[in-house]
Structure formats: C-alpha cells, structure tokens
Length: 253
Image 1 (tube, rainbow, N blue to C red):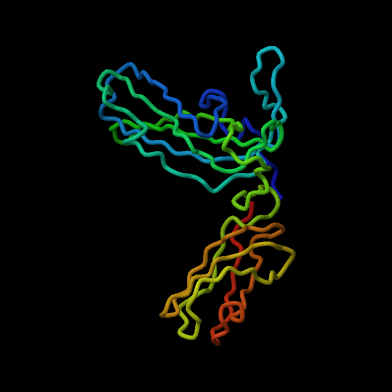
Image 2: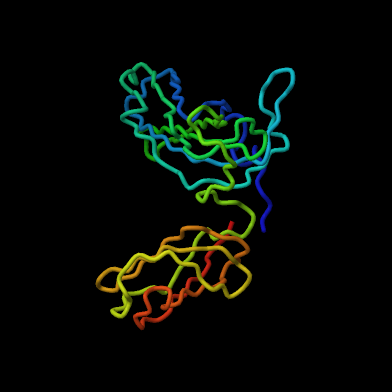
C-alpha cells in the first residue's frame, strides 16, 4: 500500500487552485481577464470528484483548513465540460473570457453536517495559445459539495461508485478473453476466484452472438496486488464449453 497524498500535494499548491463551497445544483460564473487578445487560444474544462477524510475550519476566518486532510478515494465521474455552453469567448479579442462551473458535478449522497468523508469536486479550466509548441496553463476550483434539500443523505464512501485509495483496489487489468464460438451469448456480472488475497472485485462480461467477449470492471475490491490473477469460470458464463477467462491485475490503488 502506498502513502496517501496529502491534500496540498494532490491539488498542486495554492497558486493553481481556489477553494470554494457550493451546493451540487449551484452554478457559478467567473470572468477571466487575460489582459491581451486571446481569440486564438483554445479553452477547455473537465472535473472529477474526490472524498476527503476530514476538514476543519479556522475559527477566526471561517476558511477551510486542510492541514490534516487526506484524499481517501474518488469517483469515476471524470467528464469534459461542454465548452460551447460553459465557456464564453465572445469577448476574447479584448482578453475577457467567462467560465461557468456547471451544476450537478456530483449527484451522490452527502452528510448534512459533514466534517468527515467530505465530498469535493475538482474542476479544471485550461487554456493554450496557438504557438508551436503551444503554451499551456490551467486553474482549478476545488469545490466542497454541501448538502441541500433534494440531495440524498448518506455516507459517500458507501456508494458503489466510490473507489477507496490505498487498499489494493484494482486500477487496471488485462485478460485473455477472446472470441470463443462456444461462449454463451449474454451479459454477465460476476466475481472471480483470486490467486492470492484480493477480494470483492466484480466484472461485467459481455458476449455477443459470435462469441466475442469483452470485460469491464464493476467493483474494484480490495487487497489485490499487481500480477495477481483472477479466474472467471465458464460455468459463470452460461457453461457452453469455452475456456475459463484469466484476468491479470496490472496495477492497484
């Protein structure tokens, strides 16, 4: 198990991130003044949601204190933000670009009084000029997602889409799945027998009419190590007489 990043390491320092608190259904617009014509620049944005083990607040300023905060996991909700909708470059020739942080960045559960297992969406706003090679820069908004009526109350770490870091969850894998005419067509969600101590991983196995087989991880489990193998039996896939599938863990988190 690797050492978990502290929050300042994860975000890259105060010069490139602004911390704010928002409700999931809120949107906020910000105006960037580049001080020069940026009409030839390319702008883009994306986001992902992480979970923090704890946060505290400065009693005098009310600002969030991340001194003892760690990122304990994340959601696989990385998504590009539609530039045509949320990035307004109509005044780019005067150096003005408007960027809107969209609503519904995170749609899972939140505790109303959360000081632990705190949900935070990190939104990145990027730009690059037209030189060769291009000069690139970015700004990140670290958004503490706060409960509001309409948001389901609950612990975000219990969500099936939450991936906990530092517990040997499967990050990537390979398999020997191939086209097998004997494989029974269907969509299967199955767990496999581990060669070591890893447990809890499940996979979606899709088999088409020609026997072409593809795998997608559903839950990442825990306790796995690189090079560990997981076997999915043909008996779990309709038992048509095709070979078992062997999955090899490439990396873990």
